[in-house]
Amino acid sequence: MVCFAVLLFHNQTSTLTFLTKQYYKVYKTSIFSSLIKEEEQPVGEVKGENLPGSENSEKSKISIQDVASMTSDAPAYATIGPCPDIPPKLVGPLRVEFDYHRSLDKVREEVAEPLQNGGRFKPTECVAQKVAVIIPFRNRHEHLKHWLYYLHPILLRQQVDYGIYVINQFGEGVFNRAKLMNAGYFEALKEYDYDCFVFSDVDLVPTDDRNLYRCFSNPRHLAVAMDKFGYRLPYNTYFGGVSSFSREQFLRINGFPNTYWGWGGEDDDIYKRVTFRGMSVSRPDLVIGRYKMVRHKRDLHNEPNPKNPDKLHMTHWTMDKDGINSLKYTVKEIVKEKMFTFITVDIQAPAS
Ligand SMILES: [Mn+2]
Image 1 (cartoon, protein in one colour):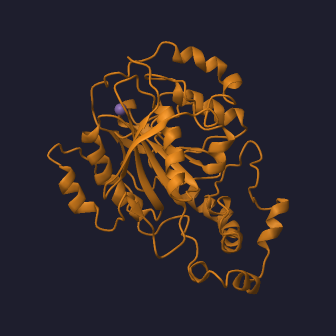
Image 2 (cartoon, protein in one colour):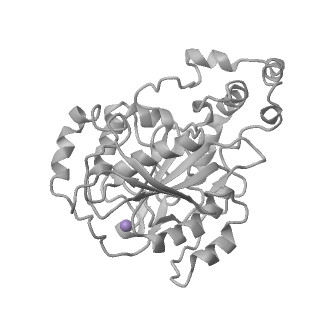
Image 3 (spheres, protein in one colour):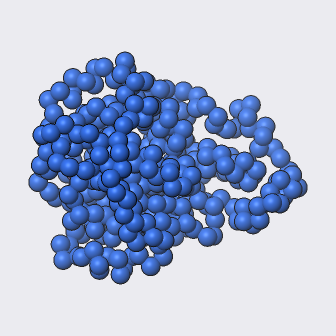
């Protein structure tokens, strides 16, 4: 059944791939040209997206000669094509174990060699999506080392032009996951022209490298089958753990809410933003979308906030005012490690 679905998907998208390849060479700064098209159609029309048959797809009908002449000033783009939709070096299911003897030094020895400082990597064999991986963080160094140990090799095999941004909440005030992710979006963009943003909890490791850390034609929820929920969604509209947004998709929902202090609710708010803006949620299947979570006690200063569930009734009215257009934070420190960029931000957290 899975094979059949893959074949079907492949057939449907093969002509489109050809068109978008040419399009990519000509309009190489366009982000949508490098988004992975899916079998499902978006609920609403995504502005600027060049789906086959749309008026804009006329732009794609450009001859090879035109492409060559238009890109003659950029030989790097003219000689290598976009990375394939299905990366060739994937291995599928992975064995993931959180060995507490694993040290950060040992992880660095094993996985850091191909990386640029700050946890950066760019494939040389093809033009990849530019992906910023944003990790909201505080006092979870133990988890981060496991995350880095597994994710760097996976991201290398997935052929992404990526950077790892650990966004560390300054101080001991109440934690705010979504506001940290908003700050991470801005901080990553200060550094590189990213066109895709993967937001991941630090304790979640995918156990199948076919779960692509990229952007798709709709916002994507990646953590669909976590071990702690018995390898299925806890509820249909669950959007927690790991997700990806193209820059356009993120802007379209005004980013994430800044006002969910403490544990809970912000992921449901984000899901609502996506549907209120006429987009649907893309997901891998329950086999590819498996995750292991590092077991841990609940964090200090991140108690479930009883006010958060009530706020969800207001998302429709508040999302245009509460988001990246109202975000306020200050950067306290930026530290470049070999395997990640560690950015400490003051998000004006209330005392707990
Ligand atoms: Mn957790």
